[in-house]
Length: 177
Image (cartoon, rainbow, N blue to C red):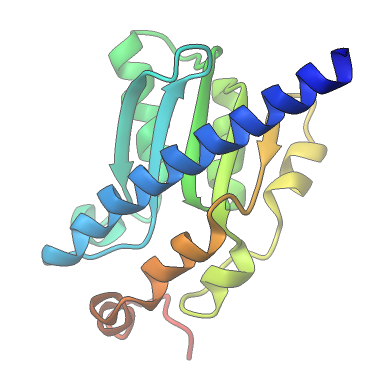
């Protein structure tokens, strides 16, 4: 009976994660109508209630800041909103697997869990990446958080394939040669 309850809970969590990711993809895609389209979006939700604390998109080009990745910006803004440097009790959702900088930031913030859609390899088809998986970054740390990857992966990969995004990649200094 306990195994059945755990399985039901896992299925419920997966359905919730997919719904959050679908909402995040829709939010991220709104950037396609702006001068700075991006396929990278992140959201921070209360792990217990599912309440949205903050969501944002990559702003590297808009802010001329190479560290303005969606995940880093979301963590920064969420911590400011809470008035503390800890996101214990919160889950980070992101349309793409966090790069080493973003994963490290999530670990330092103490998020409970990271949920991502597309992989670093998926993103690398369109723009340069540091090929160190988020799980490896987490595994080399004495800080821990749960991780669920490739949630709604195809939906997230679609952000990279959008015609407006394909055109934008041609202007990025980090585009694939």
